[in-house]
Length: 223
Image (tube, rainbow, N blue to C red; front, top):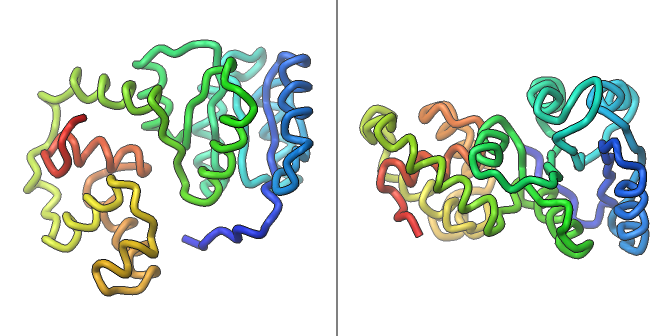
């Protein structure tokens, strides 16, 4: 995975059918010199059409929209544009919905009453570190785990090596790629390769999936 350029202006598209909400987000982000809102969409279909001609770094995606909603659009974005980070914005804070969206590829989940600084921080963190976990996403993921613990695969089924297990634990502790590389005395590129291998071995589709696997199998403890 290519390391993000921290000096790069983060290009953002917002997909939401509420014009006033889009205007509010646009106004809030306009004062941030490292973020640029490059386009807006009313629904998921319009968003996918925009993506044929534009290359955003981050998408702010509403769940409930006409024609094509965010739940339908997210898997398409993941399949066609895996490098784009997707932050779900919704009025709802249903744990099962949040857990489902994180598992199928959302990089973060915010409620629409989040303040502008929180939205900005989510954009910046997702761009630089892939995910932005907050109290809402953490509770939802753990709630999802509790309802599915009996379905968890045994740890040995993934056949993780001692080094892979140690690196997975450090990833779950939110250590950066460079910090992990320094601690294990390997290159950042090797850390990224191990992360990809961990996803393949565990069947996880994202870092959120790896966190869930680690909790299910006792590699990290539930808070």
